[in-house]
Amino acid sequence: MCQTLYRLLASFALAATLFYLLPKPVDAEPFNRSGEQMPSLDGAVAWLNSPPLTAEGLKGKVVLVDFWTYDCINCQRSLPYVNQWARKYAKDGLVVIGVHTPELAQEKILANVRRQVKALGIEYPVAVDTHFRIWHAFDNQAWPAHYFFDATGKVRYSHWGEGRYEAQEQVIQALLKEANATAPL
Image 1: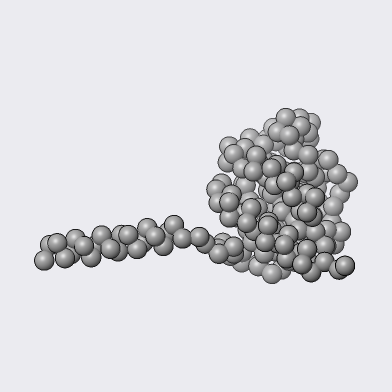
Image 2 (image 1 turned 90 degrees about the vertical axis):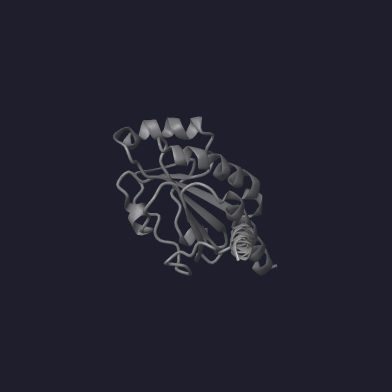
């Protein structure tokens, strides 16, 4: 009887482990506003590395919006991935937009943000969202937070916090493939 119970529990444990390890679908983290158009990017006190961008002006591009702040350790760990995606997929139509929304007093100082953008090797556009206007437009809740928009401007995936970088890159690849398949000739 004990061996049978042990085998049954071991089978359940194995099944649960295998289920956890199976690849998750691209939209594994649903966004409660999935399918909605990109919220406004208005309200930044400054734009670094770019003139101000608009949701309407980004139509036709796949867009990753990354909410971050420079003293956040979780953001510091995710930024190398975001930087890599920006460089790797720019030629394919990906636009990465950093939205620097401060958590601490020193992060509200524009000169500090400029210095950190340069030190972190960020070359993509950064909206300096000192007054949380973009943060509130997105109804954002965390640093870092990544929102992925398709070429029509609809949100298709989001991720909060660190991790799942491979899944996020797969989202980028899928959205770029989709955009290129529907692009006019």
